[in-house]
Image 1: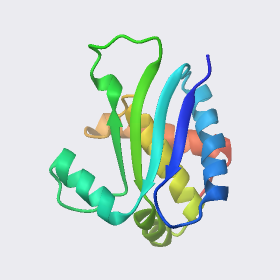
Image 2: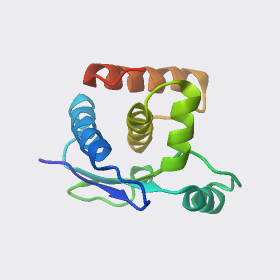
Image 3: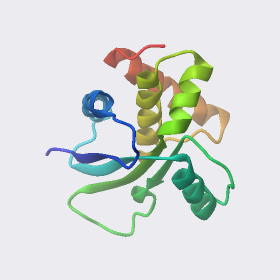
Image 4: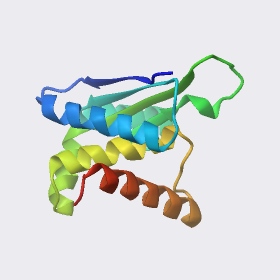
Length: 149
């Protein structure tokens, strides 16, 4: 069965080319992770919006780059489709980090999209061992897709 996801740009920035690349990258990541019949969203937002989300839902009073709301964390609902959740990605923060890390804006958007996607699948980086697994998987997906630093 086919995956259904939406990439929504709620910012003023024109991102048509980046969205096309991220769309292809997500198809690749779903295949690589054997994700089928799943639904999720990536929403591009500004600093104000992600700050509000971070404060309200995580209790962290600052801007962040990406927040994932994983619906599969709650397995009490059984459905015929995997509702993975939503990924909120801050465009302004991605632009700043691309400069800070010395790579392209597109690479940063792809990195954050895959980072958020892996969180929806249950990967985490709270413990050192988890971080190694998640970060290795991120780099593997990006490199195999052709997104390099």
